Amino acid sequence: PWLGTFHSLCDRLLRIEGLEIGIDPHFNIMTTTDQWLFIKSHLFDFNLSYYRPLGNPTKFIISIIHFFSRLQDEVIRPEEFKKFSQEKKDTAHNQEEIIEAQRLMELADTFTVYTQLKHQESLYDFGDLINLTLQLFKTRPNIRQKYQQQFQHVLVDEFQDTNIAQYEL
Image (tube, rainbow, N blue to C red; front, side, top):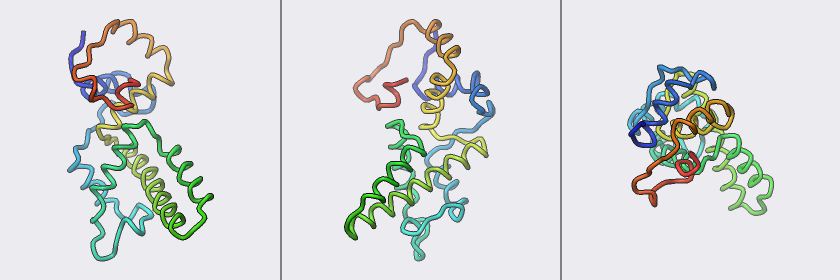
């Protein structure tokens, strides 16, 4: 038996099996502070306009981090969010809807680039641990079956506090 949090169990699984989905087993996990510094260091790699104001270009970084974390909690991948944002843009009728759609597109593009940069640098955040483990189990049924046989029972403390990604796992 294993004992741990969702994140520690996923960390362990990805270090053992992550190569199956292209994950470097020597990856590092970013805290929120690390994420802030990472985004700041790549700020001009993102096509930001609204979310990088000239007078204070780092103003929205923490909000972006929390938004991306929420997407991960809901198991929304960058390509799904981009598709949703594009649909909002295509169906916008008035100026307010157009501006909102542009902001969503900006976030969708940033989420895509952010995800790519993290993978290139073998850096992942806590949401990635769960989502990448879900990806591993969905795309490698033999590995999923291995752990289904190993873990016949799972006890989750504070079950009412789990998010969609944790519940799916």
